[in-house]
Amino acid sequence: MTESSTSSAVPFVPSPAAEPVDPTTTEAWDALESLDLERTGSLREMFAADPQRAERLSFEAADLHVDLSKNVITDRTVELLLQLAREVGVEDRRDAMLAGAHINTTEDRAVLHTALRRPEGASPALEVDGQQIDADVHETLRRVYEFADSVRSGEWTGVTGKRIETVVNIGIGGSDLGPVMIYEALKPLAQDGLTARFLSNIDPTDAYQTTRDLDPETTLVIVASKTFTTLETLTNARLVRDWLLAGLREGAGLTAEQESEAVAKHFVAVSTALDRVAEFGIDPENAFGFWNWVGGRYSVDSAIGTVLATVLGPDVFEELLAGFHAMDEHFATAPAASNVPLLMGLLNVWNVNFQEAETHAVLPYSQYLHRFPAYLQQLTMESNGKSVRWDGSLATTETGEVFWGEPGTNGQHAFYQLIHQGTRTIPADFIAFATPNHALRDGDQDVHELFLANFFAQTKALAFGKTAEEVRAEGTEGSLVPAREFSGDRPTTSIMAPQLTPSVLGQLIALYEHITFVQGAVWGINSFDQWGVELGKQLAKDLAGAVAGDEAAIAAEDSSTSALIRYYRAHREG
Image (cartoon, rainbow, N blue to C red; front, side, top):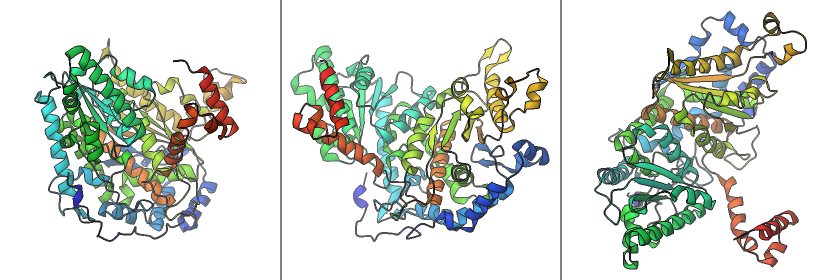
């Protein structure tokens, strides 16, 4: 990686507006507020009156088919949301981001995760702040793929000469959530005899459970920390290093003189801090870096994906990148009226700011996507959980949503009750695939068809509900009627694709990246910093002495914190 090609002498490129446009001052915002107050008619009535509604509000984006028709919107709603996007400059800000403007204002950085998936030889070549972006990205990919191929072929072995069988990725946040989600989604494509595990939590149980049944001789560890200072990651890396060396001493007769060789053969890094990498014992030649214009939660398609390229293979990783890029191209070039990330981001603004939605459910009807909602939690909430705009002024609207979800049909038997009949509006995205990864039958029943019948039924039920008259017609009477009535008008978006492939997965991830961007642009916030995570981390370091038993430090804390620490000290065993 040639990060030195970045020139600090190149002047700062400003964002397209020195201060964000307050969306509440726009004509579109006023009209949307009036529209919300004036809205009449249910989704039942809208569909009955407009046979073309589903066709008109369904869109194609790369391989994704997206149906927005079951959202509580009219054509006028869409027109005003698109007007709002124009008035606050969403597309201008998008173009500035893609060109490398420093739209991350609090850190004075470009935001170029989209550059990580530009094809080699893309024209025109991207140069930002004096750095040849495309050349650096593809040189790093080349090194990652060479390393991956050496592990997959058996050329790279552990210190005792045994082939690598397990790759343990140690990271947290963006260095963990993306890789583990993609690995789980594409696990059937892993090379036979090669698996991945992921270690993130500083809870010692996580390190113990991750390593307890592994063979140190066949284990390779990737330590993913850009600065190589992340507390959780470096603590876990030292724990795993101790486990590995102890196991090699006991099981393979490793001598003290061989320990440095063992660390070099069993540990690699994703980091740019080569001095700290070397101090840990990792050969800097086996460190793969990335740049400060890649935020952690946007980094899974950078060298952070080394574990994926290794276990799933470079070809799979390339297909994943191609999927990301296909959605990037759609977002960059599709007309606003058919631009799916733009429309979905604006719909989220509509639901948050005009329909009083506070949470957003993501419900994949695919067990392989069981970690997708957790991945989206960081992507969306760390990006848009802000109360300050990019110029330092206070936000003028509600911002952010609580993202959550589980795969269907598990969620149906857990929390769909709240979505169907609760008092809160909970927009929900339903995701499904036409072709299953594993086609099974239960007698004459195609199980995937049974599965998708639930997918289709849920969005229908949420949209159209069940009236009191329909409940009575089934023979229900008296006070049970309201309990069995469904109001309908619960907003949902349906996302479908032919099959869950690496490309389709990349498209889905990029779709939500750009949705998140659109919301942040409307609200005038910087979706690419995360200062809110810093205070707790700093306080944890400050509390270390008190937790270890320093009475003066304990006494200096507030009464609640000191009492909790004393409880811990009194009840800790071992």
